[in-house]
Image 1 (cartoon, rainbow, N blue to C red):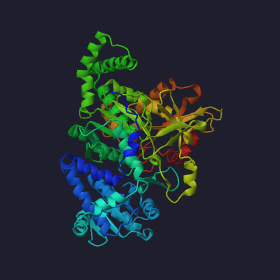
Image 2: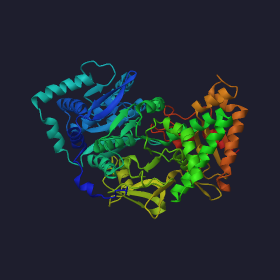
Image 3: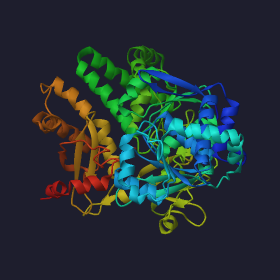
Image 4: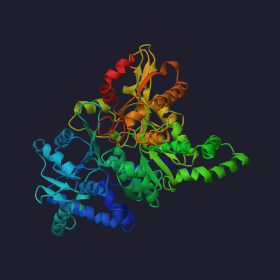
Length: 606
């Protein structure tokens, strides 16, 4: 099937997210819209049911006096109620301000104060406590709606109480939601997403209705997804990647199963059996590591069959991707290994996945190729909060491993000075909230967004990202180092790796900090006579140190001399969101890790 690059859809997009949602309810009233966990089982709702609930909640917000573009915060993990709240804000002509549930109280206070939130949806008592702690900063706040927290019937209401207010309001103004939705212009503020910067206060990215409507419509125009698909959604809805998948759902009409508990992803995939899922690269790294370490633990004939299967799978892949025929003997081997090995890999993801979409950070090409050999297609895309998440993406029928695909139809990408990636199109932000100087730095007069990423475009328009410009460093010998490329290679080599961070700016050689995956190391400990030992004791053991050293040597064999890792250290703890060293979308805050380990890094250089 040829890839649709026609951008004429831009002239016929819905006016705003509210209209996009109401149109979807009208077109697919009895089709499944969402399913979500209730105890040990899953509950399902149709578009009509979701639409009724959203309209009552939206009317409830209007009854509280919400006016166009006034901000409504959502401080919660990913769950069905998050989506209801967001869609209600859209239908009431407000603007959602997203807050990660892991955000500390001070930053919660700053975000809600800077955005002047009038109403906040708070998931539970933990989020309510943060609001109470910061109450003196929240002068604009008039009402809190809680999903699971303790309501007081006055300042703090339940979702049901808000819906009851909405029912009473609708009784007096029966067509108010439709009328409100139709009046929202495309360039009205829809969302404020505060980027979790590595230093300083987060910046509020102002995204308009047209950005989200465009994202969903562009995905629909590419004919990647339709009403027959089923998405599993676990990504943080406070992040633009999660939000863009909701936009795609409204445009394409597929159903979504929602559960934001990261520790339940694998179990949920087996139950939900989705046809696609968006994920950060760390999910694929962990899955790859789990599969490889399990086979290594089996040993013997099973491990030999596993390794031979992937050797054959890789060989077949190389021939097919080069447009060459596969010899019959190799084809027969591949068919056998597909039944013995590859089908079991696919079953780990539910057995029905057509493709995954990887975003928010760089995916290692070797890991993508590993899964591709097993019949699991991972389509890498690229974007940032400042362009509503989606700028480029590979297509199931037109992809190149190691690239992040071509620009979405109706949008543009080019390479600027210093090989910086520049973006332009309907998805670009209006600017940073209350930060005109920062906005001027990011956006050119003719609408191009400076991404801060270094990249290249090939003759077919496929974009390759080579790293963050600010993360590139130069050794004292004058050699430039792209740390992310080295880090990705190590994680593809070592199935026990969680993080591998490279440093060496203005130094005479390169060093690394290593963290190992706690789950993988628990399995390693059981197999190596250390069952029950603490994580710290395991990673400090001579055997683990020797194992890591071996993987570092394998890595060095793949690097230029000036890139090789001369010294390294395994940290006693993995990086976490709670420690502030990872963002909620699982990106490493390199500056924070470097600052936290400054003395250790300096000691490498004596």
